[in-house]
Picture 1: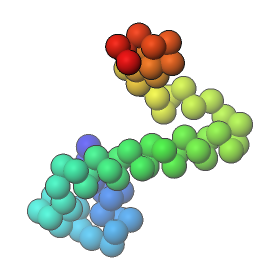
Picture 2: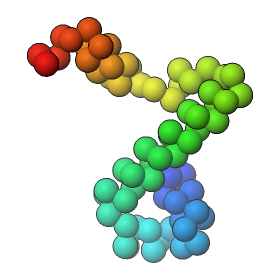
Picture 3: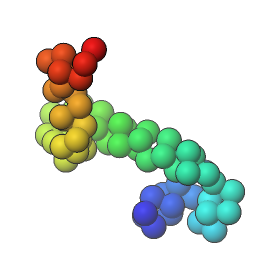
Length: 72
């Protein structure tokens, strides 16, 4: 979490304490998800494995949606 706050502060030109004071949980979640997507796309462009950018529950959700086992 600290690396996330530091990275967010660096990107937006703020002190980490400013992020903690002014940032909401939603701000942090959006930044984190966007960062993961950027890393995943960069790895795909380089032809590297993206397995470490997707957790097991995400894979399970994707699998169930594709197979129609989520009730829809």
